[in-house]
Image (cartoon, rainbow, N blue to C red; front, side, top):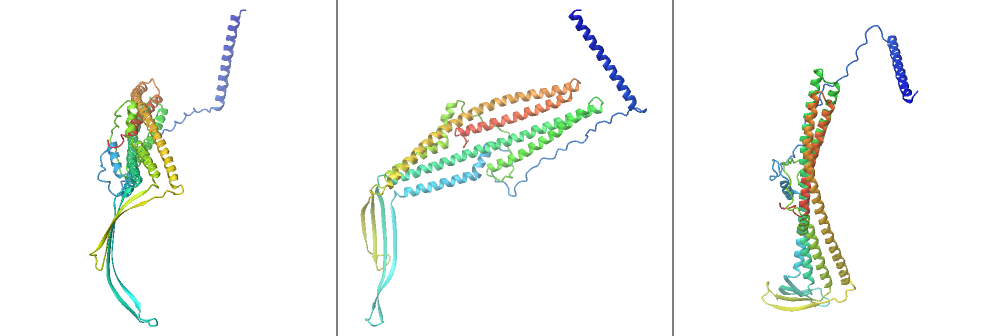
Length: 483
C-alpha cells in the first residue's frame, strides 16, 4: 500500500470515529433530556431586563456673581485676550507692588542727588536772661539784675566743591538702580499679560470642549433613539440598546466634567486679572495674532533689544560699575564751601549781624582697610552683574527659540487636527449608513462617534496650544505689553 493510500485510509477512519462520537453524544443528550424534561413544554427563557430610563443630564453649575458690581471698565460682553490683559494691568496687585518698589527707588535716587546740591540751614531764637548775685556772704538775700531780651538768627550754606566724583557716582548708581526698578515693573507687566492670556485661552479651550461634549451627548442620544426604534420594530438587538445607553451615560458624565473644568478656568482667569474670583468673565472667540517676523535670528535680535529683563540686567551692570567707582573714592579728600550769616541783637529779628565764608577740607587716608574692603566687594558685585547679563541673554535666546519651535509645531497640529475631524465626521456617516443597511453592527457606530469626539477634542486643544504658543513667543521677544 502506498503512503497516499495509507493517509487516505487514516482520514476516513478519523471521519468515521468523529461521526460515531457525535452520534453517541446526541444519543446521550437525548436520553438525558428524556430523563430530566417533564411532559409539559419547556418555558422560554425570560427576556433580559432593559433599562428604559434615560440618564438625566443635570443643569450646568454656575458661580454666583460677587456682591459688589464689577469695575466699570470690565464689560459684561465677551472680551478678547488683549482686553483681558489691559484690565489686568490696572487691577493686578503684583503690578501695584512693582510700582511701589519703583517709587521707593526713585526716592533713593533723589536722596543721592541731594548730596550734590547746596544745603541751607536756617536757625532763629529769642531768649531773656538775668544775672543773679548774692547780697552778702552770710545773707540769704538775693538780688537779680535784668539783662534784657536777646534775639539770634543764623543762615548757613554748604556746597560740595570737590570729592573726586564720589557722591556723583553714588547718584549715578541710584539712578541706574531706579532704571532696574522701571524695567522690573515692565517685566512684571509682561509676565502678567502672558499669564492672563494663557488663562484666557485655557478658558476658551474649556468652553469649546463644553460645546464639543454637548454635541457628542446629543449625537449619542440620537443613536440611542435609533437603537430603541429598531428594537421595537423587531429588527434590532437588545445589546444595541444597552450599548447606546452606556454611551449616553458616559457622554453625560464627560459633559458635566467639561462644564466644571470651564468654571474653574473662569475663576483662575478672574484671579490672574486681579478681579474677584466670582466675577463672570466671558472670552470672545478670537485668536492670538501671528508673530511679526518668521526668521528666528531676527526674533532673537529683537528680544535682546526689547526684553525688560535684559535691559534690567544691563542697568544693574551700570549700577555695579558706578558702585565700584564710588568705592574707590570713599576715603578721598572732600572739599566743601561754606557761607553764613549770623545776627544777634536785643530785638528779634536782629538788626545787626555778621557774614562769613570759608572752605573746609576733610581727608581720611587711614581707615584700617575699610575702603579696600568696599572696593573688593564692589568688584565681586560687578563680576556677578556681568555674569548675570550673559546668563539672561542666553536665557532669552533659548526662550525665543523654544517658543518659535512650539509655534511651528502647534500650527502643524491644527492642520492635522482639522483633517482628523473631517475624516471622523465621514466615518460616522458611513458607519451609521452601514448599520441602517444591516451590513454593520451597532458597535461600529459608537466607535466612530467616540473617534469623532476624540478628533474634535484634539482640534480644540491644538487651537488653544497655537494661541498660547503665539502669546509665549510675543512675550519672549518683548512684545507682551502695549499691543
